[in-house]
Length: 216
Image (tube, rainbow, N blue to C red; front, side, top):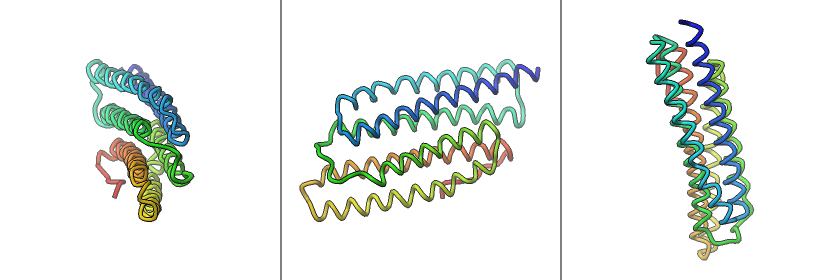
């Protein structure tokens, strides 16, 4: 019975890895769309959402199959349940990435300033997601706990984005709408990072059967 269970868990790890790669592809594309304010490209990325949803269904189906056929207990069961929760977090990350493309639909160019901190936020949030998935695959508590430190860094960047945009909007009321839209983008990326910390929390749950809040 053990070998089919192990093989099933490897299938879950691979599915989550591919799902994460799809989320990364979409977020990078949506960020490039934001920088260029290319509305046609925004529509392309918005339509890509279905691919992430398909991966989520595959993960759920595999989890249900393993629970029904292998009757896992203890740590094995926690790892399978966590895979379902992680796929939900990844699906939400994909939604947040696509929300950026939806913002581009509504923005009037050119950009009020060169974007600096927002792309850094996106890069850091993506790094957190990939580290969380690595932690899940290897059940690495150290990698999981480190996500809390990185989340604080993203939160700090988000506050700086809001502060800088507020100054610009006060000085140039004519860019108020765009400033608000860019603040929404910062919020989406901050939430993206929060979902990455959720992955770390699930890794800790697998190892300890306890819950720990990494997003304080």
